[in-house]
Length: 85
Ligand code: SF4
Ligand code: SF4
Image (tube, rainbow, N blue to C red; front, side):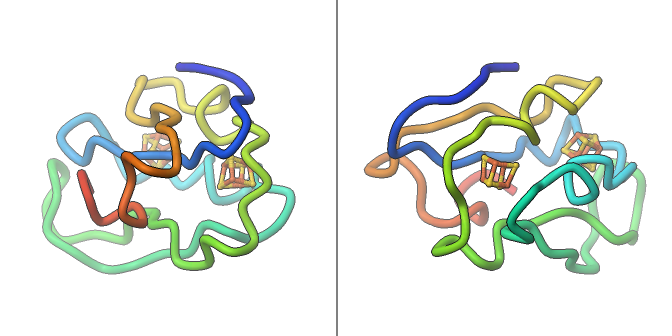
């Protein structure tokens, strides 16, 4: 887990994500959306950075995740959240 970094975006490691969706709830800008996909908990609803333009790099989603599934990556290192989700 990491907090705010300028020009960074959340990257989700799907293997660690329990689909609790707390990160979606805590995001102040609605940048995280929900997609149905097959992850570690089977075919469920998982978070995804659907609205990258809304992300203000606050790091709240990363801090909220109790499972360490979200790390903040510099913009250049993330292609949406799909890069690792
Ligand atoms: S808070 Fe963490 S475990 Fe929960 S849905 Fe978000 S990334 Fe997955
Ligand atoms: S870093 Fe902040 S604005 Fe960006 S997705 Fe996470 S909670 Fe939302």
